[in-house]
Amino acid sequence: MDRIFIRDLNLAAIIGTLPHERKFRQNITLNIELCYDMSEPCRSDNLFDAVDYSAVERDIIEKVENSSFQLLEALAQSIADLCLSYTPVRKVKVRIDKPAAAVRARAIALEIEREKTPSKPSPAAD
Image 1: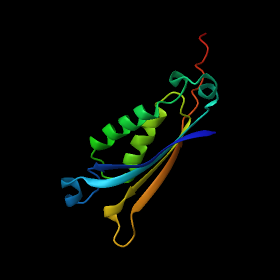
Image 2: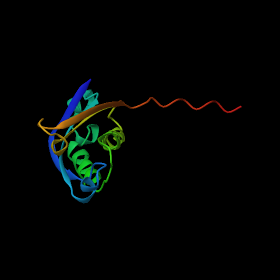
Image 3: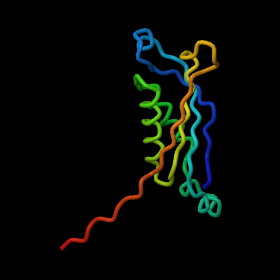
C-alpha cells in the first residue's frame, strides 16, 4: 500500500498523569504514516483524488494543541481516529516521542497502528 509520511512534527501538549505534567505543556514529536491507494491521484494529478496532507497536518496540530490527555496511548488513538476519518486513508501508524518522560534516554515513545474497518452491508429489508 502507498504511504504519506508526516515526519518529526514537533508540538507542545498537556500530556501526563502527574500534577506538574498537567500544569505546563510538554514537547512531543509525532511521526504519522497514512496508507492508501494512490493509483488515482498518480494518474489524475488532481488534489481532489488524493489525501490533502496539509489539511491532515493542520487538523493534527489543532487536535494536539487543544487536548489534555493523561496517556500517550489515548492521544495516539485520537490522532489515529482523526487520520482514518479522511476517506481514502485505509491504515495509519502514529508514533509519539515524549522526551521529558525519559530519565536517561532521548525519549519515551509509543507507536500504534490502526486500520479502517470495512463497513458491513445493511441487511435487506423484508
